Image (cartoon, rainbow, N blue to C red; front, side, top):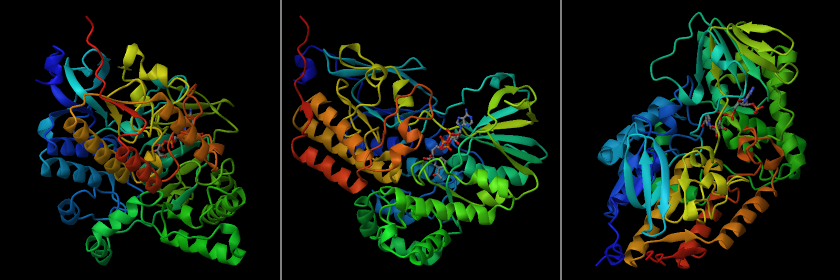
Length: 547
Ligand code: N01
């Protein structure tokens, strides 16, 4: 007799509901099916791919090299797929996600165009009921939130957006049909990673492009290029060993590390190293020396180098000065990688508006009106204004746990998780790359695979032991949150008003959300927790059935 029958409860409809069918949801489904568990995924988009399904803006591409930004769990997959560029573009990554879904035959378990609206925990039966906008009410033993860290696009709090007479776009919700800016006057609001990729491509098409910048960002040229065949072969012939090494790295990415601090070498040597990294391209610039995000003075040398590059590239001195970031240490806002971003400001059809000295007052039917009364008349506005990152999707989903407390209530002062995997009071609910895990500070696919493997092993062990419940203990969670903060404050990261800190959303608590202790270290901690009978979790203990 099952525990459900003993308790007189109806068995669940499925063992696990997975929310989301991006890279996390797809691999989770694959592992669950491999364990023989009954799983159903809900995906609000009409296709797989998650972030790569939504972010179709011009120029969208990954800044982790293709040979590393891909699944490592299947040698067949990694051998058969051919990437065409050093850094893959969004369409190619989306094709890869579709290939994986087909190759592993996963679509049959996914309900597309279906948004999860609520999930509520029933203490009497140890079951979740997951409700969707299609009227589903599915009872599941476990829920896995594979909802992504950057999945709730955010429009800025600027008045009058609805009054604009032209077309508006958000980079994170780009239309599926091609957008043609030929002959148009276009405004881009925001200068984060998305804008920095989109701006050169839009500039090449539009008649006039006006970039509205509040905070200048550091960007390194990506030097993207067609895939080098020998390089691809070098990786493919050594994939298992390289993946294993990458998993033990701080960021889950194999890069050319330097064991020296920036101040340990002469100025000439330092400059030479920055020049070399600049020429290689990509975000590995941030590991030019081992202390760039730890030591203010070291950081300043890297920041000054990039500012000097911006001044060399951008011909108009005033524009160059505006583009040269001065208000945060380099790397403490996500470092960007670009293709011709700074060069774009030398084009005659591109201009930069500094919102620090002249903020946007409102959007008007003709365009963007600034505080000094100037109106920039445009035909289209692109909001590259980012996301309610890491927590926004989870807290807006109406998840209610033990005693009816919602996740939004529990996280009102900032996210509280144990290992970024679970939150006390929400039994049997897992988050993939949740706040409190390395997530956005790492190669997302490496972190996704680590979480999925950990959850799969955990569910297998629970089943083997006949347990129906796992819940993070408050004390373990409190200690993890404290550790998360403590590690973050050893670095320069909290100095920036970044989305890592929740600073981009009005009223959001300022807490450093991802775990910065490193992917390798974090993996060891998670493995130890599992090996020690899930230290910090309460297992089993099915609650008594009410009389
Ligand atoms: O969003 P962002 P994103 N008025 O939040 C500005 C990943 N990603 O979509 O800094 C005017 O970084 C805001 O200004 P400020 C990556 O992790 C990866 O670009 O708040 N401006 C900022 O400039 C990345 O970090 C890849 O002062 C306003 C911009 O909008 C994350 O996604 C590519 C404003 C938002 O920048 C998010 O990037 C793309 C307002 N009211 C994205 N409100 C790759 O892999 C906001 N802004 C390469």
